[in-house]
Length: 392
Image (cartoon, rainbow, N blue to C red; front, side, top):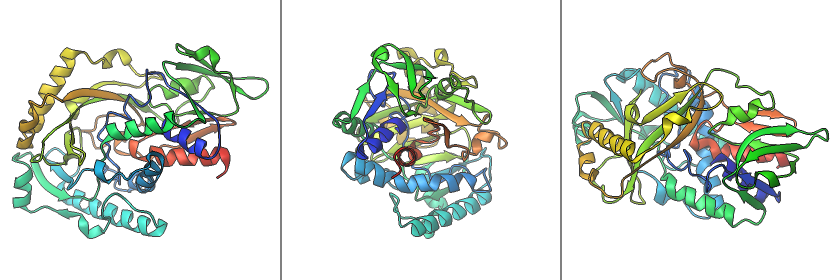
């Protein structure tokens, strides 16, 4: 998401861009296979200072305008509707604390949007966020593990068609040259100040020299940075998360997320797609070295079947309507690597993964490494990167 959007932003500014992709096509990892939450910060209730929400809100407000400009159409048909946040009994915060936090985030989002003159994909009026009555809660979940529910104004988008449209936009722009099956291993700065990219596979030997290199990787970004002596500023995590994606009639299924901790969510998008995730089943690998532990994240047919079966069973215990889509033949398991500054279990309130405000750019002359941090802020970071390079 970050690499593709950065290429489009630079091309829009008249720059020639070389876009290098390790897979056989663009956007085949976490930027394609995720729930598409356009974060306002509600998930991070353990961050009582609201540092995460303050960092995420500008990117959330910029997401729709920037992506719509890239793909030439509105995103409304790709959104979820009536998202609900369901507070789990084992949440790292209690119901009153979450209600207080959600109200503060809602007010912040509304104020920032008004000040910046920007729009989100739903109504940001603070009054929109409210606690559900017991009868409203019972319509969504039957589980006594859910102690409270909240109607929220945060939405998610259907990532698969958006990925297809962004890739089509890149492929159709003559200023962007795309190399696939080309795995970047290192960067070398020459005596003339220009940079050479050492890559294997594909067209790695034809890349030449570059005035500016943007490291927009999500998988393996620190390893490439390290070849220029750049290391992460704090302890980090690579995590491979898998979830269930499909299409079909799911009119009775809600769009809801269990918070705050290692739980799961269900999504129903307006384009007919669905998303199902149960964190304890879908977290396949986690590592804290420069390279992620790829050998632990391989998806085999047997592993996919297990993930699908166990995730649907776990989610059905909370949302009975999930059972109706269990036999849907379109369901598939996919996933990708995400990188974050932070470590620890989401079940632990002290885990630094409950704060996601530590992201940004590392700039070393013409080398720019950008931490994507969240899908929802990638287009905003891409525009900022392009402005840094071109000046407008």
